[in-house]
Image 1 (cartoon, rainbow, N blue to C red):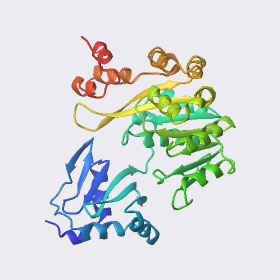
Image 2 (cartoon, helix red, strand yellow):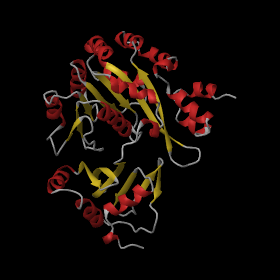
Image 3 (cartoon, helix red, strand yellow):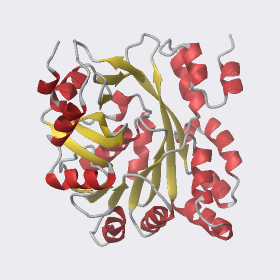
Image 4 (cartoon, rainbow, N blue to C red):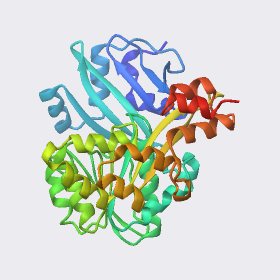
Length: 359
């Protein structure tokens, strides 16, 4: 068994990368673990329990003096670092039971395209918009960042424009292709999220990526940017198009609802809500996505506040590249890629999916 004092975080990341793990977990009085295909598992090999000193040493090795000070002041912080040629590691460091702990998200540096991700090629159409708002939604760990990277990469390859990203922390690096890419990381390139948001429209952007819609301030800036000739991408932690719009509306005071519906109907271009569903063979997960494209009919429903009509529109909107979560899941079940039992756990509307899969 290894001597715990010789274990490094980068060593664990290397193993996790080779095992296609999504996360590495470390904390005091426990051996390091990993998450692979949605399940927490042991890391291959014989690993000892880590002491509080081991965990602190491992984390301080990847932190700057400024980051250490920030952690010591607040007992939590986010950072990211690169393992050359393999991946970027998004790390949340926190305190539990009086000692340091961390969860490290492994993000491969190679950007996968939509086909590799198993997403409909029609989704690439949203990148052709010259202005408006595109939202990627889903729970934590559902692949929103990976899908966003694929969409930004399409623009980077096909358009000559300025792409500005504001992220906390920066997860996937984009290198200049036909576009010019500026990536700003909170805590390194800007002191805080909000000054960067206010400044971004003065940086001559054509495309803006906002890491996460956090509150009304972020939403207002994103909507305003989308209304004034920029294409804006961002993420929301919601599980469906309906829930996304409902969440946005409820972020604002009731008397602003009518005006906000009008703004959304003019600015919104698409909402993509996704889940990662385990494969039947146990070898990884597949992306199942609900896709809402803002056709004139959809925009009118949003303007009128009739969000309940959107599900039917997605169900019938295949010609426009739309689909419901159940339609995406059902295709995988019928292809033998996802089992029925697992499909029912991830269903959008359970009774509808059972009807769709009835033999």
